[in-house]
Structures are given as C-alpha cells and as structure tokens.
Length: 231
Length: 215
Image (cartoon, rainbow over all chains, first blue to last red; front, side):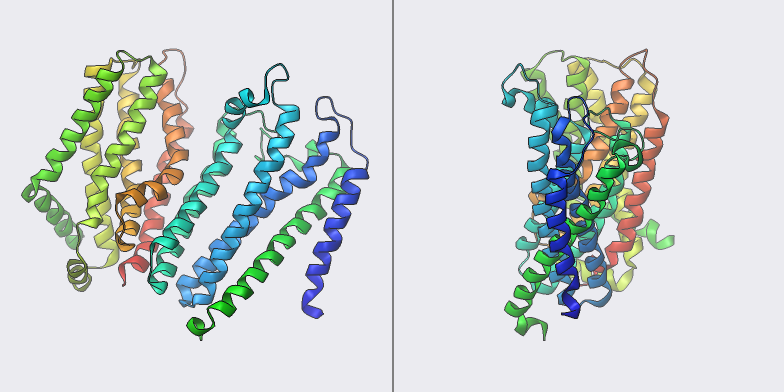
C-alpha cells in the first residue's frame, strides 16, 4: 500500500483531468472555441513523452556505469512507452489541427502536407524516428551484453544531439503552433488562463505517472521472463 | 599528440594503398551527378539546394561507412593494445572530416558545372558547404563505429543517422538558401549554432567511444 500511493494519485488526477477538463470553464477564444480542452490531453502527451525519453536515457547512462542488465531493460521499456505517448500526441494533435489549422474549403487530406511541415511536428517526428531506430538497432544485435551496451551508447548520443536541436529549431523556423516566441511548447503564463492551469498541471503529472505505471508493469514482466539472465 | 598524428598518417597511408575506395567515391559523385544532369536541366535555386544537400548526405554515408567497417576484429584488438580510445577516435574523425571537405568541394564544383550556379554570395556558401561536410562526417563517423560494432552494414547507419542529422540539415538548407538571394542577410547565429552542435558531437563521441571500443 505504501508503495502504491502514486498509482492512486495517477488515477485520481486523471479522473479529475477528464471531469474538470471536459466540464470546467475555458475562455471562449476565436477559432479555438471548445477545442482548447484538448490542451489537457495533447500537450500532456508530449510532456509525458519527453519525460519518459529522459528517464530512458538516465537508465542508459546508469547501465554504462554499472553494466547491470536490469537498467538496460528499464531503458528499453521507458523508450517504448514514450513512443506510445508520442503516437497518442500525434493522434490528439491531428484531431486538434483538423479543427483549427486545416483549410475548411478543401478536403482534410489536402491540408496534410502543409500541416506536416510545421517545425514542431518535424521535431516530434525526428524524436520518434530516432527511437524507432533505437529499437531496430537493439533487435539487430544478438549478443545480450553487446546489445545493451551499443544501444545505450546510441540512446545517449542521439538524445544529447537531438533534444537540444528540437528545442532550438522551433525558435528559428516559422510556425503556426502556439508558443512561437520563447517556450516552444507553450507559454504557460500568458497562453492559458489561471482556471485552465488548475487542470493542466495535474493533467501532466497524471499522464506521466500513468506512463510510468504502464512501464513498471512491462518491466516486471520482462524481469520475470529474463530471471535466469539477471541472476 | 604524437600518437594522433601517427594514427592519422596510418589512415592516409591506407587510403593511398587502397585507392579503389577513393576513386570509387569520386565515381559515385560523378555518376550520381550525371544521373541528376540527365533527369533535370537547370533546376531553380530551391530544388538545387535540396538536391545538393541530399546528395552530400549520401556521399557522406558512402565515404564514412568504411572507416570503421574496414577494421577487422583482430586489428581493433591490436589498436587496443597500442593506443587510447580518444586518440583512435579523433584520428578517425579528423581523417573523415578532411575526406568530406575534399568530397564536398568536388561535388560543389560538379553541381555548379552541370546544374547551373544559383549562388549570389559564393564565399559564404562555400564556407557553409565545408562546414556542412564536416558536420555530416562527424555524426556519421560515430554512427559508423556503432554500426561496425553491431556487425551491420551501411544500411543501419542510414537508419540511425538520418533522424539525428535532420536538424542540422534543416539549418544548413535554410542558411544556404539565404546565400542564393542578394537581399536576404545570412543569420550568423544559426551558423554559430551549427559549430556548437559539431562541438557537442565531438564531445559526445569522445565520451561514449570507450564503451564501444571495449569488447
């Protein structure tokens, strides 16, 4: 029970997010209207993805320091959950964009290539591609220790080069995405009202904890499967 | 320092002894450009720019891939007894950077010869091409080391490398498109950013290579 408080917290926060997010007051902005409620879902997915990728890299560093295979399993599963969060972020973003960015005079498909050019979408796509490549690289190596070491090296290398670039690029390129000046994700102080922030912050924590929860379950399964290897 | 220069000398020696790879690379550039020459005549500046950088990307993969893949397991063990990981890696990075400087100049020359010259400010663009060549070679050298250790071919280098290199390529293409117009000024902060990213890549490679090196 003592160890499970954060799982309960996650569930409570997510119930709060969904109830307060769908029923709570939001400012009526032109064009955005009620779609602004997607903020509690779409933006939180990206936050959760970034946090989980970071956790994965931390475990990769930990692996290289200790050469304990357990950390390799942690790193892999956090990366996989982060990829899922990223894909969900794309899905929620696509729904949002279809109401706000897409040209209403043309079929939805025709707007795709214009929307996909947005630097934030490119950045997110690159992050996902890197981690897909990470999974491919892992599967390409048969020796377990070698696989763990090489993929940890790639994880750290890619993260260290990619993430600064992802945070810098959107500030240089033109974009429709909110938060163009300053913070690439969004400017929490000015972009959203205080009543929304009351839901937004708990939502980030809730979704991230859910991601961690899913990952710990998968890690436990994997540790059981690899019981003989890890000693 | 002495060891570094010796290792660098060894790379040059190998290159001159096994000239097939060098001439193969030249032929690769030549034939690719000839295909492009046949496919389109006189592209406008934006297309020229895109083709040039994508072409450079593929040249880089071909040029750099062999640097680690050519070292057999036994030879790596021999180097392990002789030098440190840092010296070995720096020699490779330096050699590949020099090789890419040469190759990017050659491909720039052939591009202007065959596909026209959209450059309005030639000197900054040439500088960018050289900087871009170095950036590409640094990233792909380290990925070649990873691919060689994973006992994979150059294909996995492309999978691993393309997503990582996209931010730099975007910066390079944006910077070079400003040199095609006499009115746009060149954003020097972006150029400084590229140099900073290169420094970061060298730093990360030096930190991480010892883990690849030990078998």
